[in-house]
Amino acid sequence: MRIAKADVFVSCPGRNFVTLKISTDCGLSGVGDATLNGRELAVVSYLRDHLCPQLVGRDAQQIEDIWQYFYKGGYWRRGPVTMSAISAIDMALWDIKAKAAKMPLYQLLGGASRERVLVYGHCTGSTIDAVLDDYARHQASGFKAIRVQCGIPGVASSYGLAKQQGGKYEPASKGKRPEEQIWSTEKYLNFIPTLFDKIRSRFGEKDHLLHDIHHRLTPIEAARFGKSVEPYHLFWMEDPTPAENQACFRLIRQHTVTPIAVGEVFNSIWDCKQLMEEQLIDYIRTTVTHAGGISGMRRIADFAALYQIRTGSHGASDLSPVSMAAALHFDMWVPNFGIQEYMGYSEAMLELFPRSWSFADGYMHPGDAPGLGVDFNEKLAEQYPYEPACLPIARLEDGTLWNW
Ligand code: GCO
Ligand code: MG
Image (cartoon, rainbow, N blue to C red; front, side, top):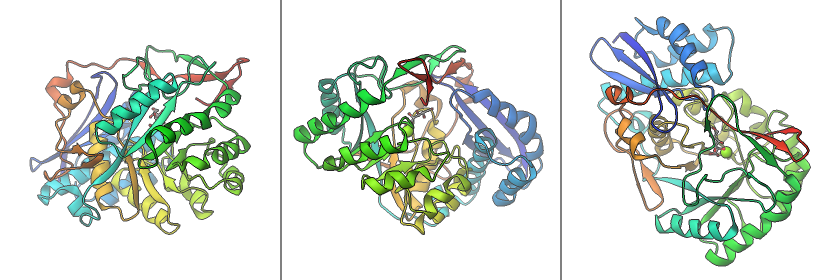
C-alpha cells in the first residue's frame, strides 16, 4: 500500500486548523491534525515543503519506520513544529491502518480498557456569581469533572475567561499582533481559595474540580497555591510553573499534596523524563497532535505507567476534531488513563469535520467506525480560508513581560 498523495489544508471555521490528508494507491485515505495555535503556517510549510515530498511512494503500513525516518532522519530533532508535523503523519497513517483492518482504532491498539472516557469541561466567569451559574450549566449538561477559571478582582484580563458571559473561552485573537494582558500574582493567590470555597459550599464534593494556573507562578508561589487549596480536594492544579527547569517541581512537591498536571506544551518523551522519574507530577497532558501522534503518546504513557502517573490529555478547542477523535481512541485503550479535556466545538467546525464520537453524561466514546472515525470536508474548507490570529502575551502590572 503506497502513499500516493499528502495534502495540507489550513482552514478557519472560527479558528485555524491545519489538516493533513494522506491518500494511498489502494483508495484508502487518512487524516491527521497538525494545528499549532498561533504558529500554524510554520507547520504547514514544514509539512508541504519538507516532509510530504518524502512521504510519497512510501509504504503506508510502515508507521513506525516512517516516524523514525522523520524524527531521526531530519537531524534537527524535537520541537513543536517538527513534532506537530510528525504527529499529523502518524495519526493519518494509523487512520489508514485501522480502516484497512476495518476496525475502530482503539481495537487495533489493543482493545478497550474501559467503557467510556471521562472528560472535563471548562467553566468560566468574570465573577464568582457568574462562575457558579456556569458551573450549574456544566452540571446540567452532564459533566462530572469541571475546570474552573474566574476573573480576579482588580486584574483586567485574567487567564481562561470567555470574551462574553456564557460564551466559550477562546484565547487567540484575530490579527498579526498579540493582545497584551495584565497579570498580578498577588491578587490571584489571595483570591483563589475563596473561589473554590464558594464552589464546594454550593455544589459539594461530588464533581472533580480542576484548575489551570497556566505557567504563571514561581515554584514557591505554586507551593503556596497548592497548600491553600488542599481543603477543596482538586483533581489537579495544572501547569503551576513553567516546566523548563523541572527540578523546580521538587520544591512544590515538598509542600503540597494537591495533584499536579503538566505537559500540554511538551512534544516528546524527553520533556517528560525528569518529571516522571522523580515522580514530580501526577498527570501527563501531552497530546496526539504535539507529542508524536499515537506512536509518541504510547511511548510516553507506558513510561508514565512505571510511576503511576496517569494521562490527562490537552483537548482545547485549538486542537481540531481530528485530534479529539485520535485522543478518544487512545484514551479508550491506554491502561493508565486519567481524564480527557473536552471544550467542545462550534457547529461550523463539526460540519467541516464529520465525526463518529459522542458525548453523554460527562463521558465520551470515539464510536465504532473504522479508523479514527472522523473526516475532513475539503470542499467546504474552501469557504474558510486561513485568518492570521495570535495567542495573547501577559505582562505584570509594572510592564514586565510574564508567562501567558
Ligand atoms: C488548556 C490550555 C489551553 C491553551 C491553548 C493555547 O488547558 O486547555 O491551557 O487553553 O491556552 O491551548 O493554544
Ligand atoms: Mg492548560
